[in-house]
Structures are given as structure tokens and as C-alpha cells.
Image (tube, rainbow, N blue to C red; front, side):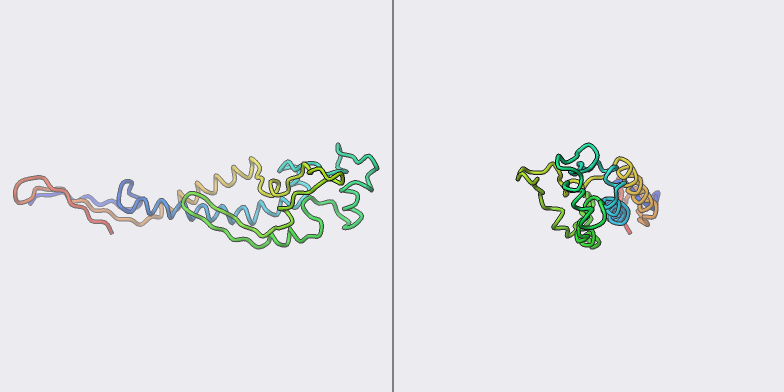
Length: 189
């Protein structure tokens, strides 16, 4: 039998294990993106700079949203008097402390970062009883264009690294069998 043996090594598109390698690379990349969000983006939500970056709704007493009865009667004024600070999403510090724990669940298509933060899920009401325009859950979930760019870069870099590091081997044999007909066999390792 006369034949040719081709050996491919690394990520081999179309091979039986290519889908598995791709999905493992994506899952690892999404896991890293979840950790990046948790370690780098989440803490910024509890800062004044983060309030601007993530476009938080102004609170009563913030510039442009003054209270009719004066600053000391506004939400921000009462918060400053009670806690000595006006940092967004922090009143007692409980929500910030609760978000220091997270479960990061990644698949080949997405990542979910789950944090116990019950107070941030509450829908505040104004003193008149009307719903507040402040949606703390939406504010906590917000990411900026810069964050989105950083996450995309990280995702692409990790997928690229994983695909380059793939140690898949594919061998194909082309030849004539005993009947003279061409035959192709392949072995995957």
C-alpha cells in the first residue's frame, strides 16, 4: 500500500475534539471575566467616581436635585448626618460587605456573578410614597464602555492563549488499499 500520512498538532478546526477545545477555552475565558468583574468592577460601584462612571440616578440632595426643605432634610443630607458619608449604594455598609462574596458560574457561552445583596434589590420610595427613580440593582449591574472593552480584551486574550496551547494531535492516512481504491483513515489522540 502506498500512502501519505499527515499529522496536525494544536487546535485543528473540524476535528472531533475541536468543539471540546473551543468550549473549554470559552468557559475558562468567561470564568476569568467573572473574576475580573468581581475584583475590579464591583468595588468601583461603591465610590463617588463609580457613580459618575456608571451614570447613577441623582439622589435627593445631590446637585441638580435639591430638596425644597433644604439640604439637611434631603436624602443625602440625612445620610451625611447619620453615617458621616455620602458614598452611593452605601448606607450601613451591609450591601458592600455582602457583595464581597460571590459565586461565579461560567459556561462556554456566558458567565454569571451572583452576589447576596438584598438591600440593593429593594425599590426605594420617596417620602410622598411614589416610587423613586433610583434603581440600585440596575446601578450595581451597570458596566461602562471602558469596562466592556477591558472584558472583551481579556476574553479574546484567554481564548487565544487556550487555543494556542491546545495539544490536540490528528493524524490522517491517505493511500490505496488492497483493492486499489483510495482510502482515508484518521486517528485522534
